[in-house]
Image (tube, rainbow, N blue to C red; front, side, top):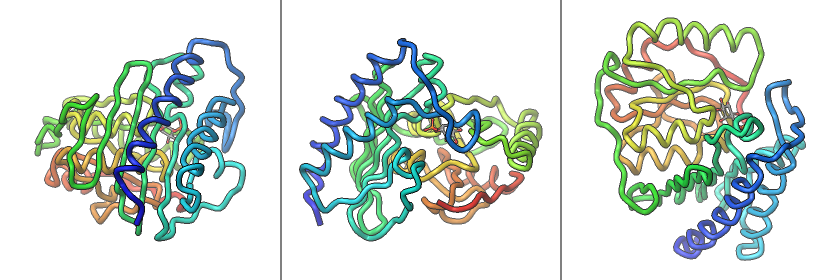
Length: 272
Ligand code: IPD
């Protein structure tokens, strides 16, 4: 078992360093390349930030493993073992980053024996630094945060995303859910970053967030941040959360999570 305090200090330093790259580049012109489809983007800065994080962690912890968004898109197989594994989205909200919309972040989690120990989500543009360690609470810029405690869907502010797939079946489900939910809830919002959507639930600014088609790197840090803020993270059909399932629903309370799960039209993407 690695020294979690040391892991935490190392990752905080590296994420801050990575944040200065994102902050410096967000308003500059950038070339975006496409991945799975024409709205699934990557820039050279996603790749550089991922390399900075992996190189920095590897130099301190040479036996640690990585599941990174950009490495995975190059065809490296995603495999979660019991070994200490860092799950990295170097820029979550790449589309926002490309457009200079300031909702973009670095998202990183440390998972050991398939249990998440550390989660960090950093939006360096708005200076929002969300952190959580297992059993130690969740924080925004060092101050404790907690979920809203809302239990009723009719009073909930819901985060959901169109996602980065243009698969007609997936889009149909997303639009059906938006259509069904709109008259039943206080409102629907999308920040364009799954990690930041989840952090809004942790902060109590939104009550529930769900998405189909996300990857482990989009949600690994958000999961522990929400749970340490007193919320819950489950599968959108109501069962336990599965990090590799590409499905997530997090909420301020289990009552709210289950009320939403019961009415969602479901979608099951291919697993990570
Ligand atoms: C995407 C964002 C987006 C979500 C997509 C993700 P990326 O991550 O989190 O909000 O809808 O499902 O893939 O590609 O910007 O890292």
